[in-house]
Length: 368
Image (cartoon, rainbow, N blue to C red; front, side):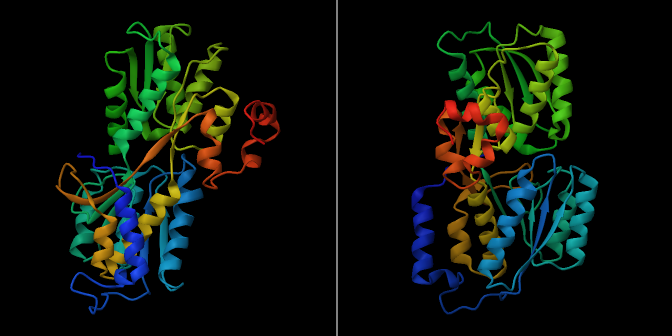
């Protein structure tokens, strides 16, 4: 996949166009009429529930933005597959049968869903791959810069190990699900930073991103390497980091090694405050979800100028080239950056994070 960072200029252009009223036009000129009015039905297919972000952030933000963009006339038809690829295929077929206007698809299995993507195309329903790059004839793709996520994780892990890091330091890699193309990109990005600098002593692709699977994998790594011989753990997301920490504690580790994460889940942020998890990757879900809603609505309303402004990047999937895309930037979240990320963006309040269990730890870093 080719990665092209979004520029500030693109965002500025979108705002400028909106201010001038140009975004109501189609590619044929300002006088052209939209192909669909405000009575838009957006089908939203999300992949799983183990990661709390989907039900807590993505769905409600997309629903709210669709309502706003369609003057309260648009609706979102929502389904979550709970990590079951066959279930998601059935959910997508239902949306095709229901003749929704556009589908936002966050695929459980990016390859396995190809048949349904083709069916949607044949039915004249645009499909926008959301968060994960589905294969097949999708119309557009929006996600975070996934290789950059891995690079940020790997780079921050090396910083945690300090200036004395060398190739004798053993690192365990807890990668994401093998059916998720994002997991491969996270791993590639992390390895671009870690290779040649540490010893990747054990590496796992974790089925369905489940914390319990990560815990079992970590127990296996501890048994193989020894609990005192693990310098750091690369965990691709926060949920799995929780499983990794459980396994380390069960093995009797009292001083935890640096452990990465991703998604800035509340549990993960609290573990960072407590010093159990070193970092997470903060991804602005409001930015991604709102842009996805804009892409979906403008696509079916025929507002080509706005759609093009929202999809100025290009990526390749295993089946298609030069897919119109938007790649949203990310940043490292450590104890020092909690105020500037999740609190500043209104994801959590200090009260959400600093519950009774974490009050002392919060006070030690001036968070209250």
